[in-house]
Image (cartoon, rainbow, N blue to C red; front, side, top):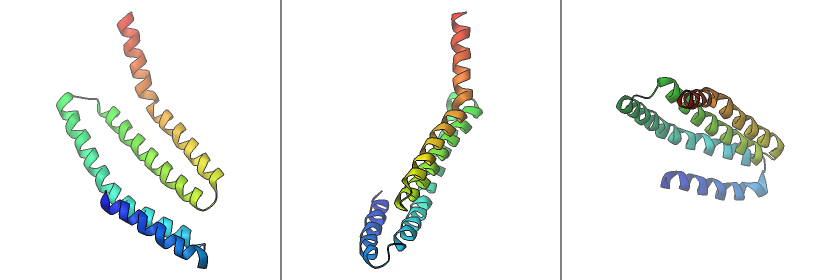
Length: 126
């Protein structure tokens, strides 16, 4: 986490210096820092996926639910990342729309879990 925090702080400091000379470099700098942080985040995501798969073998969770969980994590990360880039570029409306679409996508991906839960509740009460 310390590396990521330092990357973020250094990026912001360089951005402040470049902002006065060439403001368009700020977007490129943000994108480069974001991609660098994504590389570190990808390593963390690999560990999370491995741990989730190990949990699945221990408590016998349906593999479809694990896949849905991983998709939801991916959608959340990608939508937040792309939204932040749009907002940094001054296009906050587009960034907001990406966030809304990301939330709707997470809801759509999670519908099979909601339906399974409702079926289970219905079977329990009938």
